[in-house]
Length: 214
Image (cartoon, rainbow, N blue to C red; front, top):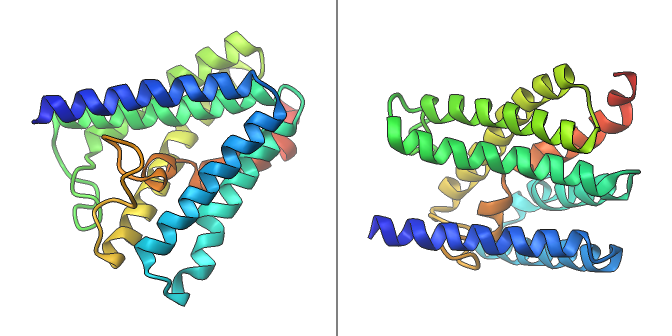
């Protein structure tokens, strides 16, 4: 069963990757349509998960609207496609490495009461792979210096995991395992996009206000 679930998860990841690349190189309207669709699906998942409780209205802004608006802002910048790919691959490499290394090595749990499968070994592995991905993408696209992309890779990995824990905490409050089932092997759209809850807004601010000095 584990092997089958892993295969489904990998096939879904490949499909997501193909859709992303196709969209980014098919023009702005395709990208806007993609992100709008993702945001709508996320909003429906959020409504179903929280059962329309008003206490979750304000968090919805920070977890759905702000991240997707930030991703579109990054895309609208000069070299936006490359910047967006750099961020997405850095976050995804964190997620993938944390999953496989955490499963392989195991060890101490970070916050077992919120996300029982997250381990310190997985977090460390995610940080390493995020650094490598950030540096490689920066070299390929020529967007940041190596030293700076190395540091920001560490920050992205940590913040992405905080986003993951944030969504997990909300799911615990709502007593649900996954935000939905739209992505086989992953759960809902929110489960796949939680790494961007904080990384997208902070990266948008970083690129606009800080990166120009490096």
